[in-house]
Image (tube, rainbow, N blue to C red):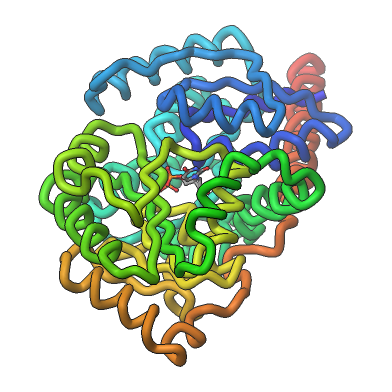
Length: 389
Ligand code: UDP
């Protein structure tokens, strides 16, 4: 039996790892342990509840107003203690959070191999997204297994001289999570019934779904986004559905600049089934999120990305996503073009899956099972040789 320790701390990591945890748990020869750092407590718990995940270890490390250096220090020591207690054969981390970066580093300090899910995403700019671009670059030289969602991501790793035989193109596990959730909501609409009232209120209007939380958009960018949403919502034929990220840098700006408006439903963050339903209701998605850039194309929703660069160029290449930055006039004019120009809308609104086919988690579990079995066989053989000598 090989012991696999899966570590995560935020909403996107939980969404992208729950299919992996299920697949690992169903794989013979593996014992799976889960550790949450709860770097983002409330948003993480929403996913744990929906995915029926009860973590084995909960470090509960979130502090109000946490700085990056304090958070990093606490994560590193907390995760190191967990690894000393658990002695895993392999540690799995996902993406580009402080949890992923410190999880990989703590494993490295103990010479425990690391598997990186969603490896190889690169924007080429260490401040966009910040600090995620550096977090994921730190994981790369440490990881023994790199699960790249796309060929573009695999290429980026090869360019960084990561050994090609350790890179596996699996698709992004977010598509697994999305398919699973779409099916569950279809079978049991009560799971997303909290949006019934908003859906009825906005019936007949074109719906723009907005999410924003990127650190590099805090300040001027967030103020411009708030003003743009206000202008978009002045149109009678449009409604804005806006689950607001709880970060005070987002909430306070939206309170001050956007305020209350008839055509804007400014609501609490949605749990995943409700958010998946919101994506289904939306005509256009306006976001600076990473995961939403991957989900919207799978559902054929045009997605305008309020960032200057993206580490997910596949959606842009496929024509479903467009990078528009955070200039107020640009946001308004791009939204109005999609609302008024049918050809422009039709060109972007095509469902396709540049990010995966929904079977990434099964591939990942299979590769992990083979690799850990191989490693254990090798170390056992070495042990026998050592005794013989
Ligand atoms: N999401 C959610 N509820 C919301 C907003 C987003 O469940 O109210 C999901 C979304 O579907 C995606 C993930 O959260 O899978 C993205 O998380 P976030 O934007 O916080 O992080 P990023 O992907 O930018 O790292």
